[in-house]
Amino acid sequence: MSKKKKPDNVVFNEADQKYDASLKTYATNLGAPQITSLDTTAWKNRSINKVNHKIKTKFSELQSAYEAMLKEYEYNQLIYQSKFSFEPVVGETYHLYRRKNSETFLSIIAPHQCNFDFVGSFKLNADSIWERVENKDDK
Image (cartoon, rainbow, N blue to C red; front, side, top):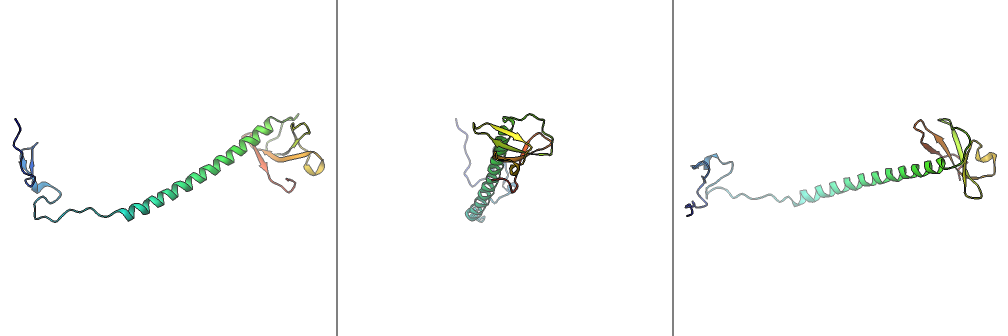
């Protein structure tokens, strides 16, 4: 019915039908030194803290980049939905204003030259993306 199993202290390879204790990379007899695992708790804790800090930092960077991109998207939506009757030139600075009825319009007139409700100054880049320009006239 069942094969006769050898005791645990006998190193016998069932597949090859050989005694192969001398071929093992570890000690196999009872007189061999005890195999103990190293305590890696301190190393794991240090590594976990390093990795968690690195991941949190990367997440913060990605979150900041996402927020900047979202802000850029909102500005572009606002400008492209505003009224203007000219074709903007790449690299030029334009000023966005809000009318009393909350409608926005784009103008080449600087904020210090008029009394409109100033929203911000923007520059059109080569990719047709509007970038906010911070200057002393911005409120």
